Image (cartoon, rainbow, N blue to C red; front, side, top):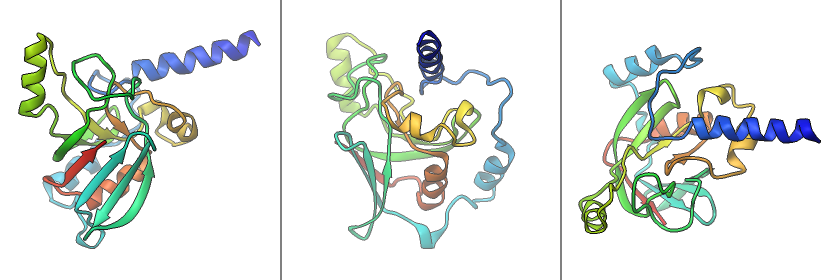
Length: 191
């Protein structure tokens, strides 16, 4: 029983250390960034036939819906911020923001394979945070798995809980689908 608790503690430490919004150097990186960067430089990061034009994240369901022409094309399970109830108000609250945003850019990440940057904070988020005298936070993304789960063997573990600092996390295979289906400017609604 003691060993079981130590293993659980170890996984929580790993998840805590792999929170989104941080970008430390990763030792022993298992992700190959060259391919990702080349796709971006050569504009080979988008496939018209696989495109989607709207992303909706339903926090209560912990699901992401991908739409094209007002029809659901795919449903993807997600993990959210460690504190999933309510909208993000400040840096460090571990909440996933709610509202209408858009995909600002694609990011090749040594930490999370690939990421789609979300347009948080919006001007209204900044204004609310300033009124409270707090930092609204930022660096909110849809990202794939941390490097310790590069092979996907821990997907059932990571998808069974909310563990990010406010980002929306998907599996690496789901990120591949998103990566080629999304262009900058695609709206994302998180509710």
